[in-house]
Length: 99
Image 1 (cartoon, rainbow, N blue to C red):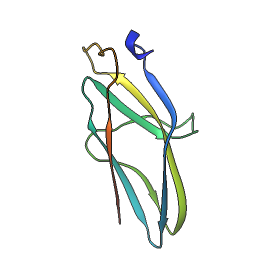
Image 2 (cartoon, helix red, strand yellow):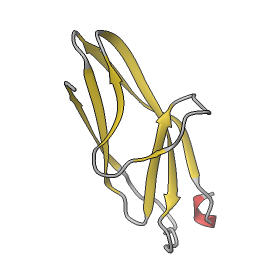
Image 3 (cartoon, one colour):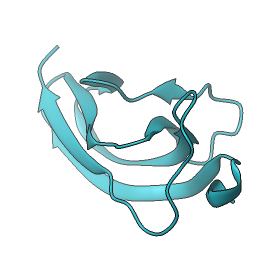
Image 4 (cartoon, helix red, strand yellow):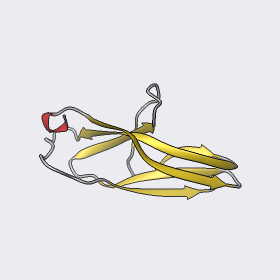
């Protein structure tokens, strides 16, 4: 796994229910990520491109109605850095706004 220099992929992470009566945009930021990079794609869509989560990244837009959102997460070691053994945390911040 990740300890041996391979990417770590965690599928179907989180569930956010968005209920809205107007257009919306969801942005996600990875707040704490020491020694690694975080990439995401919509859960279950193996053909979707991975996108890096740096700063606030707009990940999805929607409109009126209800939608449940979930993601696949890929963790990569930063260029030139060896991952630490043991546990580490990534803190995500979600912002829902009008586009």
